[in-house]
Image 1 (cartoon, one colour):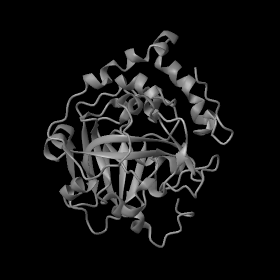
Image 2 (spheres, helix red, strand yellow):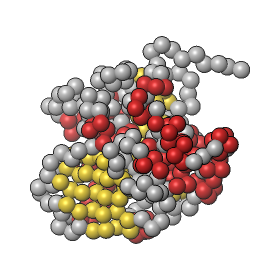
Image 3 (cartoon, one colour):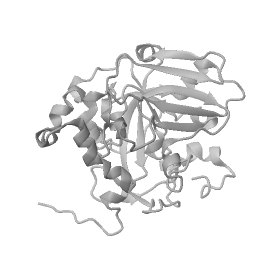
Amino acid sequence: MLIRIPRRSEPRSSEITPESVWRERRRFVEAMGLSGIALAAPGLAAAAHRQDALRVLKGVHPSQWKVDEPVNSFKDITHYNNFYELGTDKRDPARFARHLKTRPWSVVVDGLCEKPTRFDIEDILSSFPLEERIYRLRCVEAWSMVIPWVGFPLSALLDRVRPLSSARYVAFESIYDPKMLPGQKRRVLDWPYREGLRMDEARHPLTLLAVGLYGKELPGQNGAPIRLVVPWKYGFKSIKSIVRIRLVDKQPPTTWNLIAPEEYGFYANVNPEVDHPRWSQKKERRIGEFLRRKTLMFNGYEEEVASLYAGMDLNRYY
């Protein structure tokens, strides 16, 4: 039996998120009213979100966007997640995903645009061409995955509502429903979860609205039924379970930037030269691998996106 001894340079589990957050996990479990038996059998809680229980998405075609790296397994991708509405431990979202009800569901797109619209999720699935994109995902806690997302460019949705010239940013908001998501009954974060992008970032062809993975609809723990994926930024920018997209003229407030601005910048570009205050970002651990690897600038997408930040001080605008 191989026993791995963590190196001193690796962050402790308590350092992955602010102490006030990781201590909430025990209280979260108690609030859910779950017994120790339920925690010992997480498969029961996640039964509705198994790979074989998910709907196959129709008309998915391959994309030019892919990486020449092994893809993580479905189990990896769906059992090691950040989704605090479903719990603060990495394994909680898979355990409690059954609480997230994704039908009916709609996304309101409004603000500085000519045609504000409410999009029903079924209309989204049928009216936007879906493609499979294999992207790296790099989280600020220094772990990473390679994921076969299914989705469509955010720019295609924005084109439908016709942004005004005054719209300089895109603000996103996740679902807020404490009755459905007991994690929101506690002020672990300032609910609802909010994120934002500059307009040129939002319209970049790499920026994806994901509705599935591995050719099937998204499981709850991965942000069903629709989430953002911005592959050159740390994972917290890729907001899950979106219910509203608003076009605005000023930089919108974002959840982690509000709660800890010295740790989580608005831009959140993957940058090995800018450390998190409590650990280095120079290396990362790919889930499923033993050794750590070098972190790539812009998560390996430097050729595609570096021009967006020409002339910017990336140590200041982190």
